[in-house]
Image 1 (cartoon, rainbow, N blue to C red):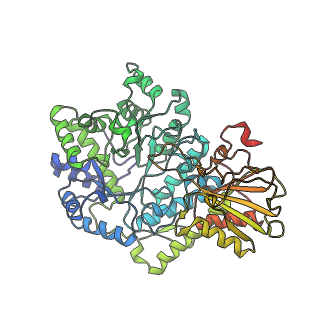
Image 2: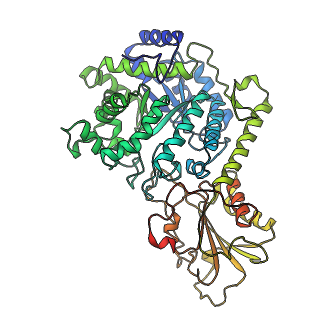
Image 3: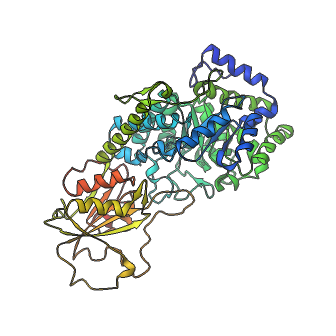
Length: 573
């Protein structure tokens, strides 16, 4: 029997009464609707309002847009919602996960590289404050994956690194920070991404650790968060055969389902072994990893019956909703399990939505000491401005502490001075666009301000040539921005098709520095570079911080949270 007065909800008598009373007054059709968290942008405004009005939707996520637009979207839905909505955002990297004008604080690996527990707490506070200021009460974070495989294209800088103890500690600090500010955390992607080198957005992937290894790493991370009152968990489309077959010895390898459909992992491990009583959600069910594992008509009710309380995103909401009702009729889903799922959803709403009270979400702010404070409506506009300024200041502090000098085998190169290198040849790789501007233009301006003559190299305008005439007083500076992203299979450097003229071939004839602004593993593609730097997040502030460290205005402080050498012997020479 679920006790809502205990972990993780700790509801009072009034809240418990609201949950039970609301559940009692919902029809079966309305209960089914509570199971779905939809992507708001997939629907016309009037259609979405009608779905909410009929209680056909329990939660919603809008992709980042201007804050004013997000607030207005939620206001229109609040006016018609008979049951408060869970309002989600991917606050993985700061307020930018909720709004286009939010703070890009830094990817978790950048925060981890700062090696400062206080920085993780500041990170969580910024995520909560900026999210809640536009109505967000539920964040699909932290990412609890352990970056064990440098070839994985989706974990990468979204993780706190490859050290399981660091991931365990940092995710706990983050969860405590956001939940203290009134935003429910949803840890992901159980049972854990980062072992496979493939992306479960595209097809089911595998956490191939032994059961003993899993319980000592990923399992320990989730168990720790559960013991620290984590409110919800997002389950990936990731198979963990060893654990599943240990829970159910009758299973064969081929029988093992992705966690989002696996009773062994959801009920057997999370509920029974770990004692988790919060909300369990699927990851997006539009993903190939979900769709390929089972016929969808069966998969949707099967996920709920296995232990998921909410279905996140839909290939077609109306179809998926009908599959829940159909499953109730055919026995794939029971009324008892439906009531259990909806009870947990309502309990989460009682916890973070102010259920039964005024549901005007005007958010939190951050005071001068970095504490989350009251309802932003009670403060002046200056308080919110101060909050954004505080967040920007913390981003700069994090960048300063995290930029990492990974490899330095050419002592004469650093610091970079205009006396030593009056000329700098800048080579940029990957995406030039960064928040608020251009990677190349930002770097060129900052270097010229310091008196350097800068050439932005264009390989298509060059021809294959020798090395005898290379300038002796020129530094070649690489800035690379290759970001992790879903639905891609690799995060590697793609050199210019014209003879790879932008590759660092003359490393023995001229001095070169390579800076990766986003991906910590690019040394695999430039193994013989003698000076290599990781910055983890591509922003104007990060570029400025990198240049300050290159020129000796600031020292390198970051500690790599992952093996930047990729386990390759030649990257160290």
